[in-house]
Length: 245
Length: 303
Image (cartoon, rainbow over all chains, first blue to last red; front, side, top):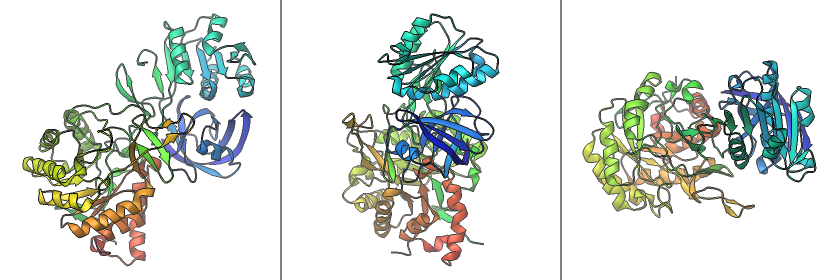
């Protein structure tokens, strides 16, 4: 974990209630896609944990949904700097994904899939991407995934964009075979994905309310087949064979 | 050079700054952030007889100037703490630590305390009779001077280590509970534990925290804690560790002037993991500004 002051480069709306925040600063604390950062905001006691969408040596991209007062306040910051703890959590293990993994993102769970997809492409893998949203106005990053050269399919619950249905409906429609899968999204989606792909090794990124984000407060504990784990420190990514649903 | 040292029941601390139980784990994460040997000591996560997973999630809610938690004493149990965590701590923390013990019964407090007797690295045992998250409604042994004294006396009988009883603010008169603990043989008092609080998710029309209520901590509770330390220091002769909303060197000075011999920093560690280091660096500057040569000299001077 590093504590870094980042400068805001851009902070723009890219879909309904969804913002893309690009920051300039030292990203060396980030070691794996699927990790998160914890952002201090003036006037709020706790930091806001946001998953990392993408990063290079000096730029950090975060995509977040405005779900409460904190993220709303963040969306109004167009310039200035932010105190951020970086490199939190384990992230996805790209080595476990194999040659043709399936990446699944639901809503606010889509962003970490981008950084993962990019790194898998750099490693020579051929990932398939399935992303799900409620409706067309919620869709983001479809073209960005395509630009990475990944076969990308979109599902919307109301059918207003892509295939009608949940990500599991899209997975069924594609009917392909995969070397592994990685998923991030609401827990019911993760559960449905794990049930849809019972014979493939998966990595699932979970979300929980947390205070510290670095493993000491025990606010985000969950039970796994191998004992209690902290979503913030031992997760957010758990392996499909350890999850207790 | 400013003298920040204080002495707590014969235990000399380089400075009065101590991370509070439940906000510092066993120090393993923080030792990667900064050299934790600069701390006066630290108080590790509350320990019960058996391993406990704790309460269902969500366990955390935010509020203005603070947070509410309902962890429910998640810990690996006293045996694992003695056989695994304490040896781990010895590798990276070279000073005596403060062990925090919790329990559902007098015998559980006694059992945990006895288990710690053989660990020389435990300098003080803090007896947490005031966890708000283990009984529905927040009732605990600190709610009544009689039950508080009962736990104190029982623990007193089984250890020679200094025992500090951690008191609850959720009482009519904290000084009555404090005096009862003093009479029952407590070497010192830690106060305050969290205030009872809650938040409601207005979209779901349900409490945010799964357990509905939790313990409110953070900067907002500082004046409440300070008042209770001030009143308690006037009522007892044993030393006090002041706890509650401490976030700055100034807060430490206020707590000590109110009567605290040492000061614990809790929830602030969770939002700013470097806060204890910042306070320790800032204290000598503030002491110089206030013409304080020895920090120990200011204990209780506002009385």
